[in-house]
Image (cartoon, rainbow, N blue to C red):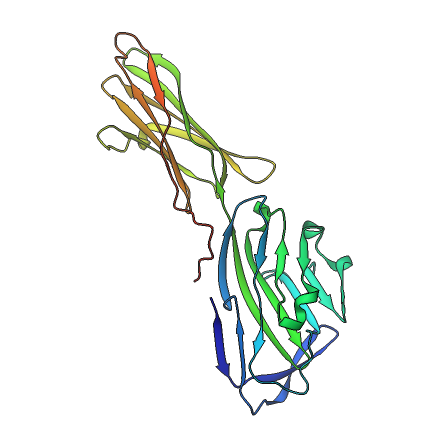
Length: 272
């Protein structure tokens, strides 16, 4: 998607990373576009590679405009400016010594593409901790612009597995488990009539070392229930497992069959 802005711009100067406006505005209208809007949302999976596509294109040439930006700076929006950046390029070189350790050896800036206005940043081995909003600040001599990017890291979760955890005179106790979720999911139970049985269950959520969530839910049902569904969903995705209970009064055998996955997640940019 291309985003275009047509407006008279205020000129800016950059000195030791401090940007301040000059007391006049550019008389000719400066036209630019970016391949990513000023505010964009991207979704990706843990462990994947993602490129923030930031490309600036000028439709009017100015004698003061250099071929390459003087500064390219990526940082979490809520962080203190220039403190522990995701990536900082300035004065013709990278400043990896100032880079936040959490992003070390995981970022690539395409310096050779600067001449084409391409200041995109590639982030490798995406982690749950990368989730959040980022600001890309680009300075070209006396001009600068910012792009806001929201990164949503989505853990899809494994197929829910339902198994018998115990029996009693009136029915059976079932356990539904799934792992690899982000954000933390919710667990719902339904019988073969579509009735919501969640109030009869209790569940726990545990976070692993990678920031993904494991969920476990337990429920006791009566013999008259023939089929039961365990639905696990987050704000971006859902999956379900199904269990059919066959002649439990006589044989207490249980036929398990694979649940159907229902995912609302798409690996495409979602724009605000």
